[in-house]
Amino acid sequence: MSSDCIFCKILQGEIPSTEVYSDETFYAFRDINPGAPTHILVIPREHIPAITDAGEEHAELLGQMLLRANAIAREEGLPENGFRYVLNCGEWGGQTVFHIHLHILGGRPLGWPPG
Ligand code: 5GP
Ligand code: ZN
Image (cartoon, rainbow, N blue to C red; front, side, top):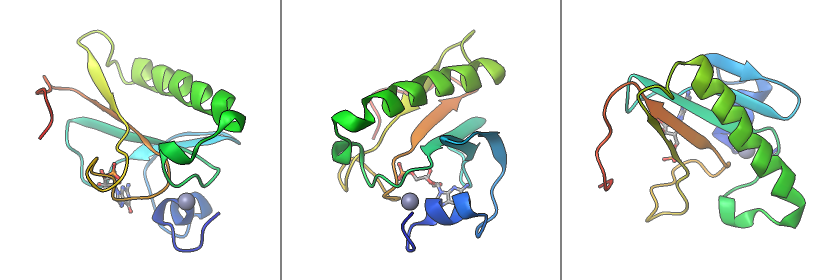
C-alpha cells in the first residue's frame, strides 16, 4: 500500500470505482476514461509500481492476473470478436498510474499499431 497511489486509494475505498471483480489478491474495475466500449483495469492488491519492478517472487501473481483477466474477458463476452490486453510501462509507454494494471479493451475493432 502506497499512500500517494490512486489505485491503492481505490483498493482502500477512499476513491470510488465501479467494481467488476474482487478477491483477496486482485481487484478489477471500469476505467474512468474508457478508450473502448469495454475498458476494465485489473490490478493486484499488492502495490508494485511498474511491470519491470516485478521479480521472480511475482511470477505466480502475474500468471494469475492474466488468467483472471481471461475470466473477466469471457464474462464480458469479448473473446468472440477479439479484444486486447495492454500493459503500459514508464513514461514513453504511456504509464500514468504507477501501480501495475492490465487494461482489458474491447467492444469495437481496435487499431494497430497504437499511437
Ligand atoms: P495507464 O496510462 O497508467 O496505463 O492507465 C491508467 C488508467 O487509469 C487510465 O486509462 C485512466 O483513465 C485510469 N484512471 C486514472 N485514474 C482513475 C480513477 O480514479 N478511477 C478509474 N476508474 N480509472 C482511473
Ligand atoms: Zn498502489
